[in-house]
Length: 95
Image (cartoon, rainbow, N blue to C red; front, side, top):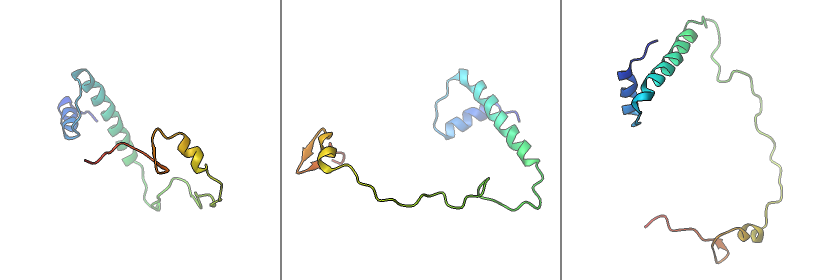
């Protein structure tokens, strides 16, 4: 599918992206290739195929919770650039 330079610039404008003129042709070609691939996928006969959420079946993707010891407070605080009353001191972000 052929994408024009104007369409690339329009999409870039919608996304509030600045594109240098030298890149417009490159992006038009790449977007065109993606759309051609999507068009190829749309030609696949999927009648009778049940919808899926994953390409492979997953039973349990999570491991069991295992309690482990963590770094102690003094070791964690030793790397802090600033401390106050045993807590990390960070720059104020809200006026």
